[in-house]
Image 1 (cartoon, rainbow, N blue to C red):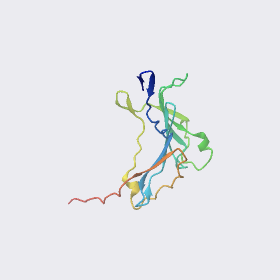
Image 2: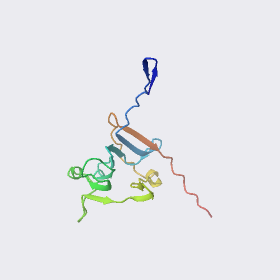
Image 3: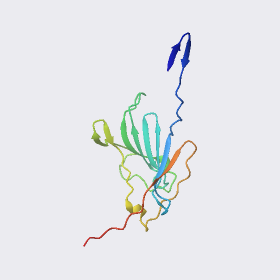
Image 4: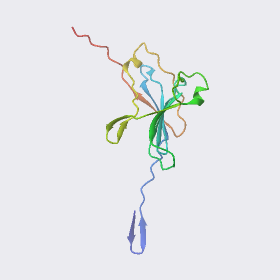
Length: 162
């Protein structure tokens, strides 16, 4: 914004906000109980967003959300893709069976005009029960990435009604 004062121009600028992280990694759990979920990685590039588990056994599947892109030949879509580079490294629980394609396009679920539900991650109470084995602790986030523990409380014992 600028304002002319006599022959001088005064320029005022807002402070530059810090850059947004390009990668967010999170898990759900409790430091108190030592129970937590697998960690997940969300990241973006241009008009696309991606979700992938950080657990080595589950990294073979990636969900992609591609928005409108000005580059030629790129169409908006949602898809699940098998990551062959991870598949070939071994120790992966995901694999192709039969004619399942490497890339499967899906429509999502329209919840409102122009708004689609594409992915739902659920962390049910049984993941945090006393008998549950916690997932492995992921490595610390890299510089410029954000890491978070989303807290959960212990499940209350069920109340049995007469």
